[in-house]
Length: 399
Picture 1 (cartoon, one colour):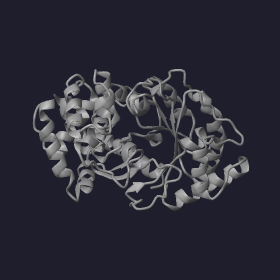
Picture 2: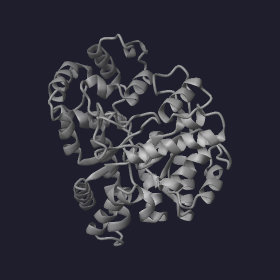
Picture 3: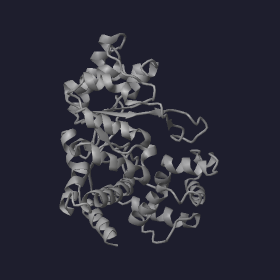
């Protein structure tokens, strides 16, 4: 009981730390949800429902949205043991006034009507951020995003570069690049000029990072390729480079939208050793897709000054894996080289339950591994939490 009380006290204090979310997929022109369909359209729910037996017909664009939610909730009863169900329950209780013990398909109309009424309020976006205690949210911006029409001090631009590295052979990508930069790319020199233009555009609009997701077999090599140029420009423009490593696209080819990709245990950070060695001035914020890779990431962050552990990504983003991975990081990696968590959210309402999931685990780990053994006081534990959740983000990304 004493331990439970300490965890609750630490959690309450950690929740008072104002957050900067260093990675999301928020659309800054429509950051908050407008209907319950925006909430349960998140790929976690559609892929879990599909995995539990729902066919894909309800996910068609012309399917009645309210009926789609009814169908997903009917299948949710088969996965109400999951962390993702917990996220939705917390959203329903915190934002939609739900007071029941568990959510079923019978709650569809009540939840739909509440969401429709509340989300139509003009201050809904501000209210969601206030209740979540989130001050800033990093975006994932295509290279041709004009970065206009939104507050870049609240929604921080980040240059996503997958298209430049993996799809530059497609005519439509080259056309987009030419339209954005005014440069027709035909060789390494013109590609370098074009990428330079992108970095100028993004940093002028307040961008704080460059990011890319990478397949398991990718190996950066020095030379006139886009990826190496990106690292060079990160060095020149003093931007951290977010590497999200290990995703295999379209493994389950018949999966729902965004529910097709998986990880590959054969990935190794040794593939990036030359990159880390070549750019000591660049901070590489590294996310790995599986908890099984965490020990390698911990070791690289332990040894390389420019490698930072970055969040708990995708398939490792459930409490069981977070707790194991977090313990290893806190026991082995300098506290100033850890970015505790990011939401990866598509709608603002998910910031609260996702960060709360992490904060609960963090409170438990701090209580068990630091406060009880007498390594830190409660105040010191909260200060360590602030380092992971706020201070390091401000310093690494120069906020």
